[in-house]
Length: 538
Image (cartoon, rainbow, N blue to C red; front, side, top):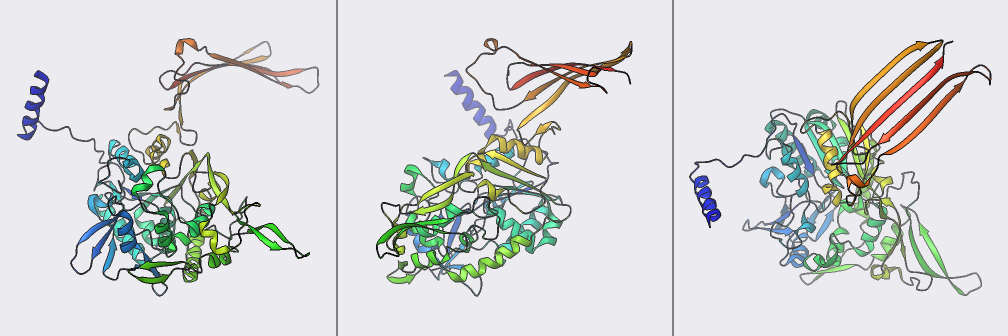
């Protein structure tokens, strides 16, 4: 009871402002950060042009699929390069609350159970606030309509205005841009088209899990079968795969994620189909057809030639869009010619250690495809390579730019935004908190020298040198947590090296070293090196 009374008194004191709430830590010396999400990583709001009423259409639980079909289904306009909603009275916009962070934080703020499936930059925002960043002063977000092309002029204009506003809000400090996934293509397009603005306002650009050369397996199956953004039971509260399929067929952004046909792939991504063909002898045979990037367009055209949607009783054809394909070729030119401006530093973080779709196969030798239009109803199988589960590592690290560093991090495509390893790398590159000159972002550890002694002297024509050095290797990832420190013994290893003289019978120099690696304790591992060398004077 006494504890409850104390809580009540404290609450009243806070209300009366007799005591102050603890204030969050703010570092005014930090350079501003702008977070740019990937595909489907921004909240989208539908605005009724007649009455101005707004409602969230991506992402939501109640009526999600219905609102998605009525408000977000679109058609591409080749004259403008823009995808326009089928509803002529609806305008899609991105909310700007919390300086743009609200649209890219938690995509459905109303969701309680299973909320993790709609968190986007949430964990990173929370972490960066701990480092001393402040919303509206040093931390901002840039959400955008992910249906559109990554080089759409409207989006480029909005990003230019955003960079300028962040620059001014932070007192004229240059900006660290952190992009995820397709956001990397958007930033690269902007860098290619608005290089002067990028150079003026941007200090560093850090791309995370960017599909610089496409996401071959994932996108090939998307054109034929659609995609799911969540797995498991959460799909019951989400957009159906079929509804998503109909949207993405008219999205230039998806076409811009196709496998780059001009890239020198180590393993060429293929679209493969088992089909019945009549042999030279007139008998049917089952063969495996393979199509390279660029050669699979005819398959997409044939498979989607009869695709339609019923929109308010009107049957609208939605075939594979060749007009979008023309637009994408120009986007690819922009991406291929983009360069990092002088004075700007570029960093690339990409995911590894997960099986990632690369080539796609439909049908099998036992159940071949008899009608290409039936591909929409076939379950694809994948040939996988290393990556983050969505983007192959080969694609993500082939940015075609001058990079200060490229770091591979084990992690899943969207989950990599929550990886402690990524947080430590960002903290180091952003110079947040106390700078640590010994941090190694590639291997994710700190080597901290703790002792160094070296002596050298001559004795009877010999030069004797002794060396003693000690380090502490500091890492946040502790292995063998079930083992107690006392149950483990130091690891001792020795090495000897010798160098011969002018003839095989004369010894010129010899060195011997002993290394002692002590067991890890509280994230630290102590290493001792003792070495001695003896050489004959010339």
